[in-house]
Figure 1 (cartoon, rainbow, N blue to C red):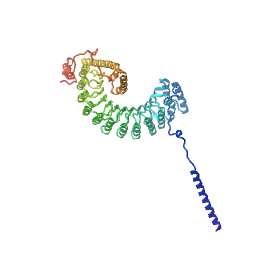
Figure 2: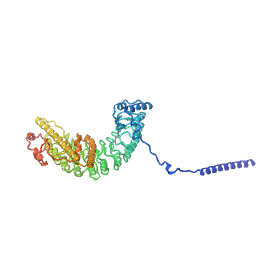
Figure 3: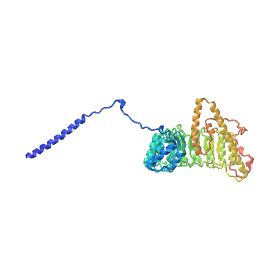
Figure 4: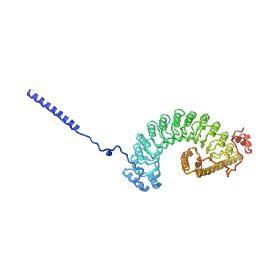
Length: 540
């Protein structure tokens, strides 16, 4: 019994000792205290330094960059790419700026991308071309992170790169959101379903991109909804290419109409090769009529628009104040559609370029266009290629251009004729039309020069800035509408041409639109063909 009680006493003693130790620990903890430095010494944040000025490497020559790239390849145990070395050997470097780094079709794994860091660190490129580059997911992520960190380019092409994976898309959206140098991005021929579309849309909320090309990206449906939702509040994007995306005339057209209503900065919208159709055109026209719409270039080639859809344009054209370029080529407008558009076009005061290539127009529609030219004082380019514009239509254009002093480019295809006389007449008329357009261009250049000289200095600066903006957008316009532009004619867009007799074409009796058809009727050179029914014009 005594032994048992001793053991119990020992156990109680051990428990008391443990309790005492715990109490001492708590006391020691409570005795601790925290002190803060003065306010001026507290670190409240940090910023990661980016060498945007490239002060360290700005004196490197392309030969030195090439040597550094070779050493970097040795370090990462990869072979230097001959195509890259060739570009560094023959490239033109101004300061630290180089026009292009072309990596098209290159197979780039993670180590190959890491070896490129010395190039991206030392040089700034106007254009980095990664179209169809065989990028691994980790390599794409690493390469895009480096492009962001060193602000290596202003134009990036990631088209035909479907294998960059989720990590690559995260890096790309991070680049879009944070880069201050990147102004143009091309992501064409890449499926934008699900995660890519969602991540891109979120990035566009704060992006500084001015140009975004998403040609053939399968954007119809939910992806387009996500994209438009972000772009409604975007205030940086100026040009958007959504061609070849199978956009339909229902849900997709409604989204595009909302984009035109609520976005106040977008200037160029490329929608060619979709299925907008007549019903979709109505949605677009409703959006364009809103006073907040800022669109200047609308390209709708090959969109299944017919004569019935022209009615919506008829109602919209007279009230449009910003649209300068309208391309309706590849749609079955027909002669009746052109007749419907004639009066609205005359009432419109903003349109400078009109594309009607392959629109099922014959000489009857051409006469309606000639009547429009007679009344228009601002139209500068007209594209009627791939239409049946024969001698009667060319004669109407020639007569109209004796009055119209604004058109500087009328693009028309010569049509083979079996009769030698008709072929000679067609050649003569095409030459005469070209001469009249050249005379208009010269007249407009002289008027622009005189206007610039007469303006005070501050206004001249503003005009120069506006002309620069017009020239910038014209590069995209000319490539899509298919009309060759000359620099003097671009500069003249800010000044109305003076109506004065040309040295090439002396002033004669005034021709009115009402007299065009009657002028065509009695022309002796055409009477025989008209009687045989071979002339395509409509004779009253």
